[in-house]
Length: 287
Image (cartoon, rainbow, N blue to C red; front, side, top):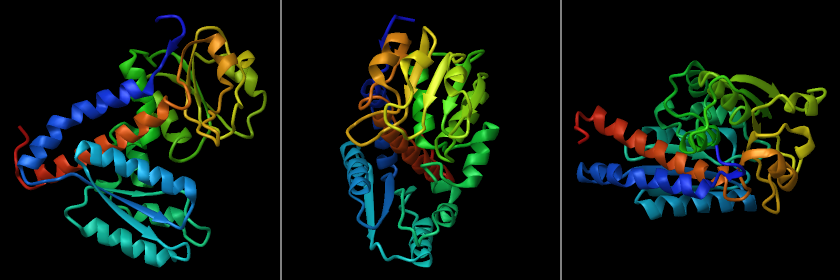
């Protein structure tokens, strides 16, 4: 591996999106336009920005973006009704509920209501279980992005010690399972882990997913480590202190421009995958 390899997420994301163009064309020729429905509950500015970014990415690629914006006073039952309607809409292939939702909404219950076939963001427990067992169709998009970056840059997980810092149900836990399925030895750390720097000193691969800006320091890492920073904090700051970690790493993702763009591209890919599944169910042949 080249010394100080910058893992450019924009390059990977563009490659993923380029690979989708012919597939979308075939779907269109068969009367199907891939459609991603995004649900935003409330008026969180960051969430609004994320939803807009995803919608723009869809339109640039020829994927329909169906946006549903619900008031901040929406109840759990009202949200579940919207999700159920989208489940039953044959023209919708993917459903994304933007996180976080207002406090009165049972987010987990809402996630579980999303049809497995349309769970393109990998948020259901059923989808997570299938991913952990190695046959999930739609893994969570950020973990999928991390593995796609590794694949693109030919970074193998096999036989390596990967340390994941974070255990959220849509990032830390699934990426740990996915790396394990790639034959890495995986240690999952979190807020109650003692001697975290000592744990990280053992890592060949570090996945930062803790949600704390500039948290992981370069002197916690060993020489030649691969650093994949999935953190995105205010001010475009990752979870690793970039300059000091860059000095130790053989390969590192920047923030911004690392994992983030690939996450969105994987969401688009999953939506296209779902649309193709719909076409197969309709007994139409994919050329």
